[in-house]
Image (cartoon, rainbow, N blue to C red; front, side, top):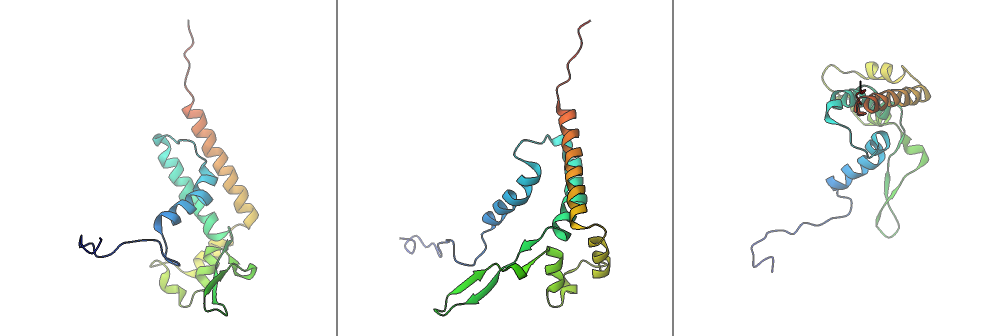
Length: 154
């Protein structure tokens, strides 16, 4: 039927092929929803939320939050298997440094020495505490400013 309609190809999910929507939803579930929750954040706070994400959340995720990276191998039956081993746990920054010729992936002007200094500014626990404090301040501001104002009757 597809051939008769001259539809060249039917798309479907395939093994080991990224599905952008699944990647976005996975990130939403693991990072965004964990930090921001499910409630609506009014648009007037977009600058504060973006500043929090840029200045606090992203550095924490890139330099201090460990991730599991897969190891792929072919088993005895010839199938590709994926394993998440403890020794492959590292931060995204550590993974970037471990890549061959990793300097080519840096933005112009950025160096690993500068990034290493930024990663070592705080311990992982200090970065997590700073993240929690910044998030608490952000949501206190949103809660305080979003609360309806009641006028006093004279």
